[in-house]
Image (cartoon, rainbow, N blue to C red):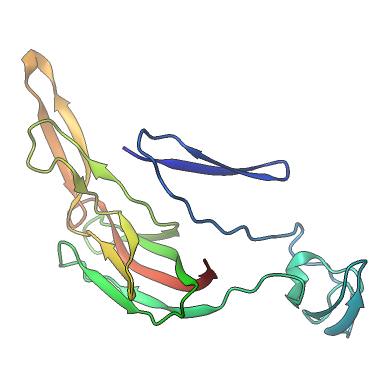
Length: 216
């Protein structure tokens, strides 16, 4: 199997392969400041500056703390890398389908590759029309059971992006299993309570997506 974790350690991005299979990781590091905004009541939103290496231009939020704004106050800085957004939108998942997909056609020039960023809306199916919704990062999970027909099946709260040569394909599995509860394992037999995404489980309802173009 394969799995990967990532975290910031000091000034270093640490990516660790915790699985047994080799993987290839493509990554982007975004900067964010705390606090989110520095109020300085400055009317300057277009600033020409110079540091020890070069001249540069900044476009700032109105009322930012010029001449020393926080990172989140800077809308554009010509010293920073810019990744164009080549596609964005929302996919309303067909929750009546077992494995719906959504194609995002792309026509990138040579030397560029797509980098999808996804935000999933999850629906907790509670019955009686009282479903609840939460938003979060996408995930990919499978369930396993020895000899079970559902072994290896993607769970109903799974969604991911498949990158092909000419498009990105979003995939979800809203009618699959959410989880399997072991009810009885005595006497060498097992009894399971299977919770499905459309019946008491958790499923992907919609996906907000951004496709960035990154240099290869």
